[in-house]
Picture 1 (cartoon, helix red, strand yellow):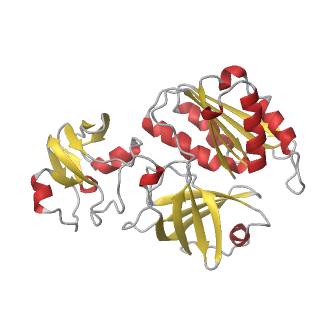
Picture 2: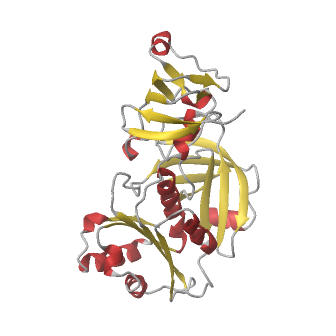
Picture 3: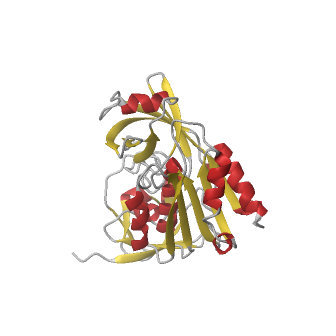
Length: 336
């Protein structure tokens, strides 16, 4: 059977996205970067109810959740269990901002541990299908393993709340990272997730170009933000500056950062090597100046500037940017 693509219009949000006839309305909306409410994606919780105004839908999976008769009569349906048979006009409430997302407590399982290099590990954990994590790109959560906890930014896109990725640096001062790097965590180990929190999120309605600046592991939330921007299919120009210790040959996921050239028309990636020794106290002012000297005035003008770096470096770099004439309101920062 030929797959058809249908247009889904959100009548109360002035938004539109495409959905194949064999895909759920929820999955298609999430892929297009829409902050749709859902907890399970399998018809159990009822969080993804929408109202069908016009068009035809078909049920593509069983659901245990029972929609109240009055709501059903108004056109209520579960987006996770239905696909379009025609163009649709639906009414649905989206997550408006970070304040709209509740703090969640979910027990997950380790799915995959990948040692990127001697300094970083990619940790992927999986939530139960009945309890996925709602979050916004750029936010962070607290991870608990037995009596050890640590706070990390999410490196994954909100379009997938089941598989959550983190980039964890090997630090003696971080007990969680030491357990991970020493083999204490394995596939199917239980990890408790509490969160999300943080306001380092995309200004989705802005038409400004976007400048992302990350120091080393600050790439994790920046990756989440850029991939969310890609899912929104915005045509904003994106410039990404990734500062890293010059003793490393390249940033730890250099090829990944380069790969966005294939999907973004206006994207420029600039790795910035900086004098830095992981075993010593370093001059944050010198590193800030190195990064700033790689930014041109045209890069910063009329731009939303997203910076993720250690607090002292974030402050010093922000001061340099403001001193060049950029309004501090255009800077969004998240300390590592």
